[in-house]
Length: 332
Length: 271
Image (cartoon, rainbow over all chains, first blue to last red; front, top):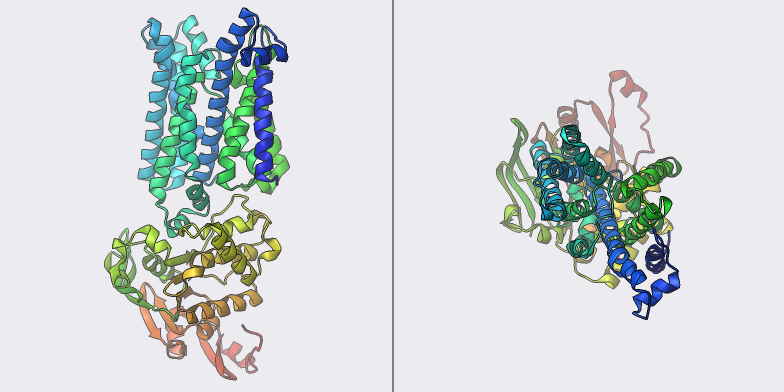
């Protein structure tokens, strides 16, 4: 185990380094020194300035916010369900968002604002509806496993719905549905960053639940005997999680595995205490998504790989490695 | 001052799990609950810990109905060890112990001192920094007991500790250490409820015993009065023999007549 304070210093240094690196790579590669000059507002080439400040900086901030938020949501959902294999997708939020976004892309009105606001807006509403459905079915089923199973069922329904919409769509629509379902930071601009700025606020609210989340890992009964209202905690935490993931998915599409793998890495290296796991996941999620985005821009430059493909391609095998390598240590 | 069940019953899905049960936990006393599987021992503990509300009768803490108490205030006075632990995340042992301090706002240094003291008493120092999930069943149980002790360590006087089969995973030495500790806590003013399977341990450490059968109290009172061959036959469907050993007596199960004959020389290593 790594001493948390040392780990956080390392993580913050890594984050800054990754951000600087990410500003330098892309279809036009800039020297790091030039990037630094632009950032501290020294004289520089106007084109380079535009690339860094208007294109790359908002994109980097968006990757940091969405990556940190998604990983935090993963950590919280895993604690809440006492299952290290749980993922934010389990409460239906990602697939619900994907379904509604696809629906809007295929059937929505084609106006100027539709692309920038309509897709994220409907994704967000879809995410909330799916989460509410999962919660409601879970409440009627009465147990936590009924909620997990409801999540699986609603995911399946939503994925079938996305498939149906794709089938009904025109070629052009199909392309945007596919791109959206794969996840991309392509549309990153300052207005997206403004919306994503809500994420750190919600992450802070989740961090304040650390003590309660620690208690709930002991069991619902035990948490109750420690004075915690478990059903209220669960509702609160799920609402926050749905908000974070909903915003993320609505802005960047579905980015898989970050919410699943990052909290594992943090627990393996820094322990299970949520006071450490939540900020640790936020930091590591930011770094990994930022690096993944840089890579997705670099690999096929000047084109780019949808980031969801990259995170799944890297995250999937890595997760299998974890399962085999760690055996009992994952606590499964 | 007492934690009481007054003519309490609990009914769920048409099944009467408890019926007309009285219980009075007072500071300084250890009440043992025994009974066959499914007799209602755990339901009784859940009513007393406010996890379940009685469907008839009442549960009270210091004369106030448990329903009117807040979760937070109950957690500062009542600590509970459930039968099974769900903890599957790799927490460090000292972190698990610290969770017992959640209901209190006593500050880090007080909490750390309490955790330290309890780990000494529960002999957990050797693995304070080990990961809970790597421990054996008995070691995990000692950690969980330690967590429950941390919860009321600084407010023992007037606190209630409810343990559901605490000794089941423990080895003989740790069973005895734990039960002696329970006695000590009672002397310091705690009221204690122990669900036990080992009748001899119950006889030795409880001040009062409640024998449950099919949700009803079959007998209660002093151990000697409750633990008669007749009561045990009625409660468990087992023939027993009472064997005098020094000051106490041992209860030896004897499934058949032939076994009784073979046990003419009583076994001497029972706890």
